[in-house]
Amino acid sequence: MGMQKQKNIMTSKLPSSKNDQIETLCSMSPVIPVLTFETVEEALPVSEALLEGGITVLEITLRTPVALDVIKMLSEKLPEAKVGAGTITTPELYHSAEEAGACFMVSPGLTNELLEAGVTSDIPLLPGIQTISEMLLGLQYNYQRFKFFPASVSGGPQALKAYSGPFGDVKFCPTGGISLDNAQDYLKLSNVMCVGGSWLAPKNLIEEKNWAGIKQRAQETFIKLQQG
Image (tube, rainbow, N blue to C red):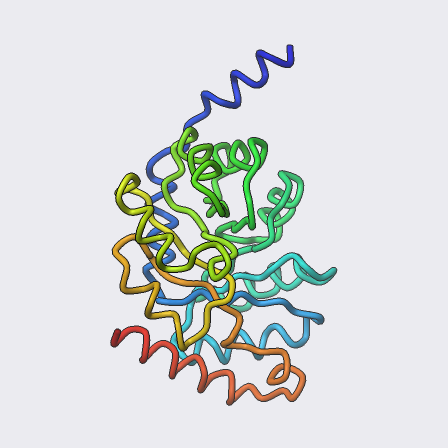
């Protein structure tokens, strides 16, 4: 039974359309803000400020008890935003985020079970990889769009440039250690769709309720990175 189950998992294939869905989301903005909220109340003004600044794709990490409530609230109140769930580590979290209204999923790493969940769900998954071996596992399921994490300590732009040789059809959203100062080093690579970062809504601005400051950061980021 165990061998048969493993065989079934390994022959599952992701429809190419789901790779296309992820790439479409990533093409909407040069950066996807990685957001961790301590309260539901702070999530709406922060997200509205980011939207007003031109950032329409938001990743809400499942690192706090309120994260699923935040996703549900933002999905209802900000239909113009693409609200996704980050830090997806199990199929159970995947399904919980799906029920909360997330329109995409992001994982820090991958397992057979997570990849299978992404194949069977209607909501696309951007699985995280750090090594080529992990990427090869994803490719067996026909995933061709990956999060590269943690980017800065895993070889940075040089690693992704090297990956483009043997894996020309694979594209990435690098996250981890990325700031406005080094984002262009990644975005200039042909196999980078966008970057992920937490600098747009830092903790101090949220605590100060400086929504105008977050909006300004979003505007400056969007303009600078779009200009290249």
